[in-house]
Length: 117
Length: 116
Image 1 (spheres, rainbow over the protein chains, first blue to last red):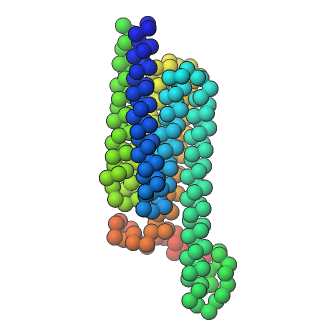
Image 2 (image 1 turned 180 degrees about the horizontal axis):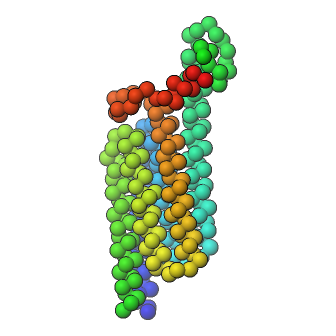
Image 3 (image 1 turned 90 degrees about the vertical axis):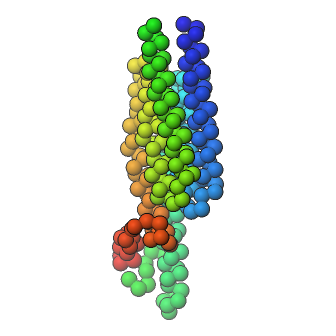
């Protein structure tokens, strides 16, 4: 019985090390992604891998409450991706509307309403 | 003996999950375009999480805790397509040289936004 517990511990520690390495690579992709979508993909991957790492730590450390933290982290990671993409789409739309409105004579700086609609 | 069979099942699931994780990270670094990278990254959200959490459920046994772990998988399966949809919409709307990478016709939402 002692041997099998150590076997489970070694197995999940190995998987945890692999998850940590993948997490580092996901953060590298989030830092040096050339476009915004690459960065958000890296952030999404990092959130999912952190969820996995929390689930593994709940087994390794025998902390039963960490599974709840894992569930909440999953929610928060999804929310961060939604908010980031919404913010970037909105700012891009306002910027392009401003750039489109500048050459024409319409000097309205309202973001939503396009001048030539 | 039965415990060792259970350990072998958990180890096989965890090893398959680790292989899927490494494959997905490799794909994210090998592809050169954001939509292709998203395709590689979404493998973790569906298959990698499923395999590793199934391994943990086998190790824990069927308790309330494994129900919570299964709930994590279900939640990721619901939210990952939504997140992928939002990120791909961001890329299609803000991408300037999209036609060079992908065979996408004029982004319909951009046209609709300018018409509204």
